[in-house]
Image (cartoon, rainbow, N blue to C red; front, side, top):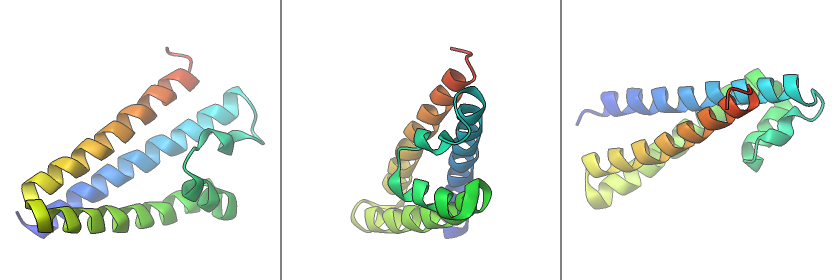
Length: 112
């Protein structure tokens, strides 16, 4: 599989994750407390970036970090199991993260 396609897929997954995470934080701030809106983020590394750089720039920088970590994970897994299995693992992990973020976005939006 071409590396350019894999890079594009991982960028798309990371971008969707960061956009939905930002929407969750904004929605939580609207519903509960604007000062405590970062409490909704459970990832301590992401929370650190958001506290130091703000929501937008923290999301961008943490997105770059997430992309680098996902690529390293892909390369390590593909070394042992091949590209297709590594891509399935990345899709599975990010799929679960995105579904979880969507669930909480719907919860904080009071849809469910």
